[in-house]
Length: 275
Image (cartoon, rainbow, N blue to C red; front, side, top):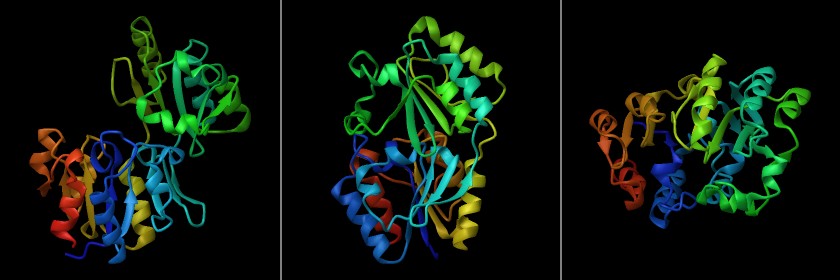
């Protein structure tokens, strides 16, 4: 089988338990694959600026599928190959639902993380995810006074939003208001953490656009992942790899079930099929 690209998920797949770094064995396998001319293509729910440091530092990894396909970029040329966003008007309407309530919100847009300045100025009071501490310590987030006004005035569309530590009494009102917009796809449902994307978003369409650029098909791809977001590519790829920690329904349909993310499953799959 002519595998020319690896679709690589991060959280629950390539990264260790710290959700920041790749193990030496996994990184070695990825490097050896690149030496054979295989493209490594991150395909993740993460925004560009929050990619793992080891990936961001490797210029050989050229094409990034970010925010669940909302934005596909060529890092070498800075070209946006594909984009599917909330409109600026939708983005402003969405932000008005949660801004000004003291909720820790990461708003992904333009490949960056925007946050309310009031939240940025006192992060110690908020539900900062442990695996985002490195990012915030580097002060890479962009603080703005009122995200809704900033996005609208600057014509910026949101890729996705993560709300962390939403108080119990605010969960249902926020979820109901988001659903009422008609344009939001809520990924993680009710709970203290809420993640949502544009309803019109289609990661497979994003991948189709990138593959056309690279002149490859799914038969030329190994896809590795662990979640519902990864499943369509795993099932369609020439070699679909589910991590050992993936849900059973994904593992049953995959071509290969690798060891869990914290046991070098990525390296195991690459070594078995490509090295």
